[in-house]
Image (tube, rainbow, N blue to C red; front, side):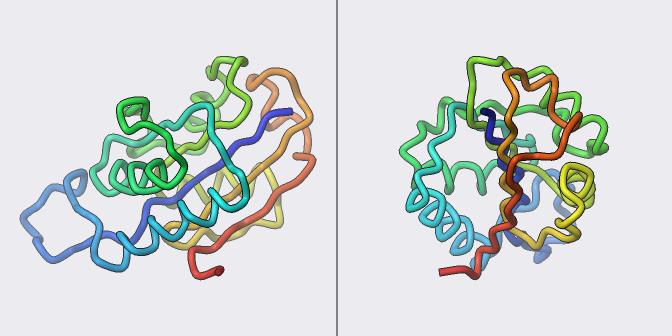
Amino acid sequence: MKTLFLVRHAKSSRDDPTLPDKDRPLNERGMRDASRVGEQLAKRGAKPDLILSSSARRALTTAEAVARKLDYRRKDIVVEDRLYAATPDDLLAIVHELDDKAKRVMLFGHNPELTELAHRLSGKITDMATCSVAEFAFDIRSWSNVGEQEPASATLHDPKES
């Protein structure tokens, strides 16, 4: 069994129009939502073996806030440049390359590609709000098989859930 969590970064700030897109920080709501999502995941026992994050500041900050609530060390977060400005096919290729020793993986990235990949994996997911988490459980042994069959379960978690 493999569990894949696709996590859209939390709400970012657009207060400084001179900042490059990749350097935009989270706004206040984004910081609260990221912490709340981490708490929700911790309550559900979602302990990742691996966290991969886009190199964009808003995605990495979201990953760090969630990781803190999951007792996952910040230094163990893998920053993957290919998660920034990726296509759904790029994201799937990254998943297919994952080490099969990892059973539970969290990928922190961006829209629209996260929603598009989530929808491809399960047609019932059509939109991912900021800081939402699409969780997929696959009855497979290798990450290279993700996308070849329907997941055993697919759930979309919203940061507004209590």
